Length: 110
Length: 115
Image (cartoon, rainbow over all chains, first blue to last red; front, side, top):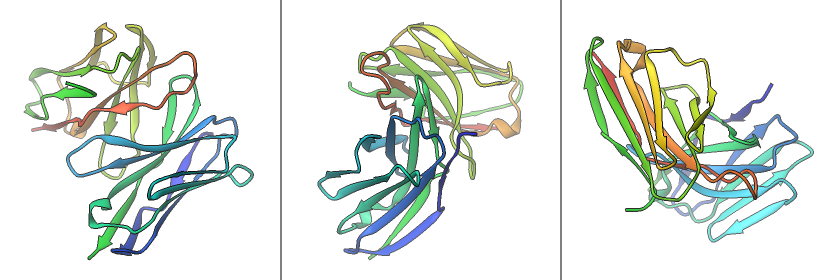
């Protein structure tokens, strides 16, 4: 069946890089997304990548896609305390169906 | 106003009350969604509407009744809820069609507590 898996927690020091990993199961996924959720707020779309791409860079964010292993990662360079949040990986399996992971809670220590 | 707006932000109700959650999107999208977000569980899709027509009901109990009068507004009518229905209810919208698979944009949610 369709499933998206992420580790639940990640802790980094301010200024370090954070890498959040995700695996998915549906090889027909066309788009893969990263969302950020801060306390008391909804999910904010951070970035997304087409399945025919290997990498996408957007300022401090780098997304890497390994389609063979169905592995997606989000790297945040120079992590700041404001980056503390829950990060959700999601895949669009066609039409209206988007499958979300359980979210990775990122703690940034000053 | 831009984006997806949800009201109220917080709601406390008894099990016998009737209340409604409202969602409005200002993005010109044609699809709208209700999700339930509970602690320690993945995001659960409840309903999908496309051009005001319901396209998905993910086995949601009938005590949740959605309404989509137009592509910009979505309601979730609540009646005789249970304590396990306490959660954050998120609304989202997206532009479906060509190109396919556009990302969903979310509101900030309604935090619902059932007494």
